[in-house]
Length: 172
Length: 293
Image (cartoon, rainbow over all chains, first blue to last red; front, top):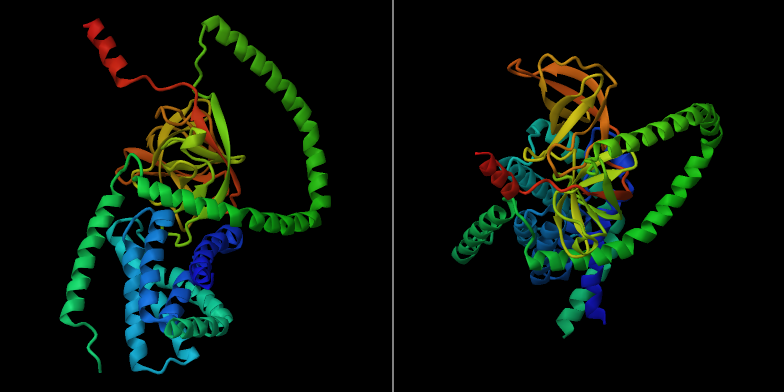
C-alpha cells in the first residue's frame, strides 16, 4: 500500500500543475508576465536528492514522457530534460552538503536549466519567436519567484517524507 | 572531484540525444491521428484529470459567484437599460428569420454553411508550460469529435481540435503561435472582405487578420467572423472586432488587428462545432469537370 503512495502523489502534482494554470489563469494571464508552475520538477528533484538517485531519475523519465504526451504533444523534450536535470542535481549533491536550503536553491537552478533548455528547443522548432531578453524578463524571473514560493512551502514536509521513504527502501 | 561524465555515461547521453531528435521529429510533423499508446495515456490521465478538475472548478466557481455578487447592483442597472433594446431586436430577428426561411424555400436551398451541431464539453486541463496553448476537454472520438473542428465559447471562436483520443481531445487555441493554423475569416460590412487569421500578437493580445485586399475600406469596430470557405469551419462564428488596420510589408495586402471576442484564459465550458454541410469530395469535383469536357 505504502509503495503505491509515491506514484499517486507524483501523479497528483502532475495534475496540480495543469489545475493551477486552469484555475488561476485569469490572474496569471492578464498581465504581461508568463508564470509557469514547475512543481513537478521541484518534487522530482527532492525525490532524487532525498529519496534516492535511481528512483528520482526513473520517475523523472516516466513523468517527463507523460508530460510530453498529455500536455505538449511534442514527445521528447521533457522526457529528455527531466532525467538529465535530475542526474546533474544528484551529481552536484555529491559535491556539496545536502542541506535543505542548498537543495532548494539547487532545484531553482534546475528550473532555470529546464526553462532555458525548453526555450532553446522551442526556438529551434519555431514554436516561439520570443527574444531572449523578453524571455528572461517576462518568463524566467516571474516563474522563478512562483516556484521559489512553492519550494519554500513544501520543502520541509517533502524532505521528511522522502527521508522516510529512503529509510524504508534501505530496510527492505 | 568525481568525474561528471564517464565514457559509458557519454554514450548514454549521445544515444538519448539521438532518441530525442527522432521522437521530436516523429511527433512534430502534421499527424492525422495519435498513435494508440498516446491515446491510451491521454484517456487514462484525462479520466484522473476530470476527477480532480470538477471539484476544483466547483470551488473556484463558488468564489467567483461571491465576487460577482458585489457588482450585482450596477450590473442590474445596466442590464435593465439594455432590456428595452432587446425587445425591439427580438422582433427584428424573428421577422428576419422567417423571411430567410421563406426565401430559402423559394430558392430550394436546404444546405446552409452556417448550420452546425454543437457538442458541449468541459475543460479538464491546460498545458502548464505555456509554450503551446493547448486545452484538454472531456469529449473525444466516441462523442463524434474529429480533428480540425472549430471550438467556440459563448463569446466566439477560441480554436480548433488539434488531436483526438477516444474520450478526450486536445484543443489548440487561436493564440498559439503556429504558422500552419490558418482560418478563413471575413469582415462584415456593406461589402464583405475576406482574409485569413494567421498568428497572434502576444504583446498586444490581438489576432492578425492577413491577406485583406489593399483597396478594401475597413473601419474600427467592424465585426470579424469565420467565412466557412475552408469547408472545415461553419460560417458566421464570431471571432472579434477590428482594432487597427495596417498595410502589409509589401503594400499588396492589408493586415487587420482583431481583438478576440472570447477570453482565451478563463475557459471552463466549450462547444465543439460540427458542420452539417460537408465539403464536396475531390472526386466529385473532378468527375464533374470531366463531364463538362
